[in-house]
Figure 1: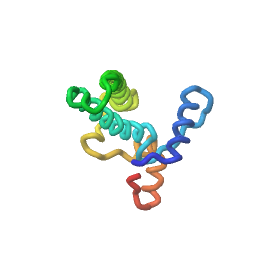
Figure 2 (figure 1 turned 135 degrees about the vertical axis):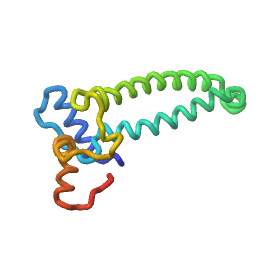
Figure 3 (figure 1 turned 30 degrees about the vertical axis):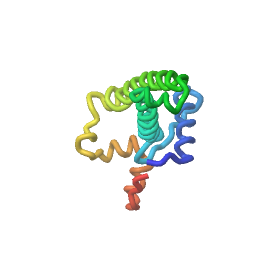
Length: 139
């Protein structure tokens, strides 16, 4: 699930499509640029929360080796990213659960299986790779 140059191109193409500047919509493999961005943002946010949360939790110990302004900065960064995380959960909920394409719920989270029609529609590059009989890359 590594980010690749194609993902950046897909993000630009997708943005142009959403803004009505282009009729072309990118074709996705097993994981779209949105899924990869969500995946990696989780780890970035977790690292940030770990560092800032530790500074806040152990504030007296932290003040022994850093100026008090850093403690205040850690507080604002921690609170700001908490709000960003809430927005991320709302975005994820819409894209996965409340999106008209998936509404009520996308059953593949329980089974791990996707119908061939769904794979052809949502993940055309992945579907083509499976049809060719090639090795399925986990990306």
